[in-house]
Length: 115
Length: 117
Image (cartoon, rainbow over all chains, first blue to last red; front, side, top):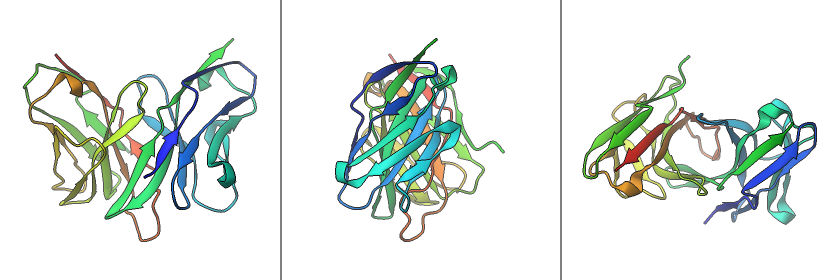
């Protein structure tokens, strides 16, 4: 069965500093991987996704993620964090099952941004 | 374009009461799903539907019922609310799944915050 682990419950970075959020997955086949962001009181918004091809994926808001099969990881990065990036970030893996697919989410990492 | 809408935004129930959480999408998506979000647990899939008339269980289906009579609507019913169902509920939808494609982007509604006393 697939699973997603986000090792960091919360991370604090200074505005302008670089960011890396970790995500490890467990899945027997080629995974479909996602990063979503949730601002307070809001639903989830897709940042980026990986299905195949180039292992470095560019997303919205200046985010990127790199798929590393050997490490079963899909870490999210941003070179310079803005105060508006403070939110909760969810990594997810999508997998086929009978009649459709299921998306399994990690527990989330809350990002705090210091001025 | 409204996207995915959910009503109500907030609800307080007493143990044993029933209610229906509404979800509608106007994007002609065939795939719809319900998640619950609890602190430290991410989102867990309750039920999902791959099209009108077709539903299936997710990870945590107990205590919830769903039906899909139209493409647009996917209501979630709590028949007898329990305090353990206190949570934030999200509905999501995505385009039709075709063979070989397992990971379409999901579009989420704003959520319904439910408190069961």
